[in-house]
Image (cartoon, rainbow, N blue to C red; front, side):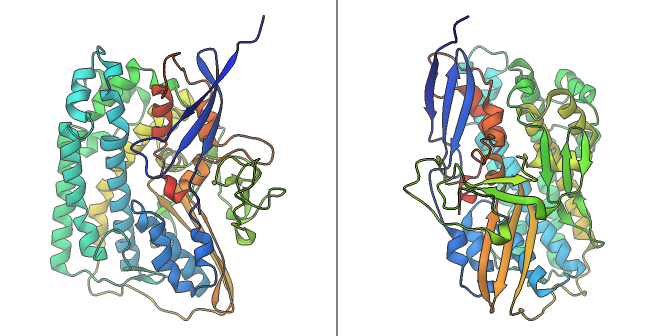
Length: 487
């Protein structure tokens, strides 16, 4: 049998993506046989930070991104706390959790309403049984859900206004905690804001109390919701996912990692730290992380780079590399990160069952994101009630002359790490591995594709498609933030 001819297709730049993204596809017959993901813009924040006072990281690092700047602030603060040997007081942990959670749930809401669902309101889907509802709710810049979701997001950000003074690029987050104390009046206002956001989720997104969403524990529960559940946007997505078979689209390697999200007073996290692969849990060891440059436009292509010894030396003349993104690997292997990884590592029964059944698919990623939206919103009220206005909010210490530490947190899109090395009182090295660096990495030293590159293999492509819808659904299911990806 003769081999089918291959054709190439360049997809990009993508709209409704933060930053620049281009994907080169090799297509055999009617499906993708190989994908090459390119982050075409080099930004250089890691180089900008070198030689500066370590505390400058709190000002510079958040400006990596205007969408997840609180997460970048948090990672920088954690790295600085590590080199300074600081322990954050309980109030500081609670306030930090509230600020990072606000940004993360707002990102989940924005992704669903503004980035992901509008693709199903395109004329290409006209005639599908759900199309009229999807168009009315999610047509770009016009849908009723787009307007109400944007309004709910804006109201939720009052939490960051009260706790952080502004968003993005707040300076309230510090290595020892937070600089803004909350009094009893603030707490009443914050509770009212979070409860209002909860009502929006219950009335619009889910059409049911959050407790009913939190009770979902098996694929059968999800199927019952699709067939006869409340008529919210969640059910509409489940109907679309069933009709387009999104449960079997976009599966990558089945390896997932989480740094752990929302610290507790005893050192644990609301969502645990660890990895999940082949149905097994394992600890996460940051010492096993290294970045590969073979197919990045970076010097040092002949070896892996552990972050504490990492380098960011761009090579614009490199003809082997096809992306400015490096290729992070854990123990030499590519890992996926994001809400699906957090829920898998945390052991949530529904997400574990979906992944065991269908892998990390488009449907699994979106369901995990919406489930996490409900879980995190639900716990935010308990954090507010636990605040003691009279207790300490921030600890202080001197900056050592030499030290190194890593700040590990979870942004909305997944595992974020800042590796800081201080020598002679200045930043000697600063390496940042963002969630999209993991998910959208190029091939490594062994030529192994990154998670998105692998997830795109097998995606169906119609002959006449210039921007295949299947490819867009897969890319958007990862919720890329390209400006965080390359430094």
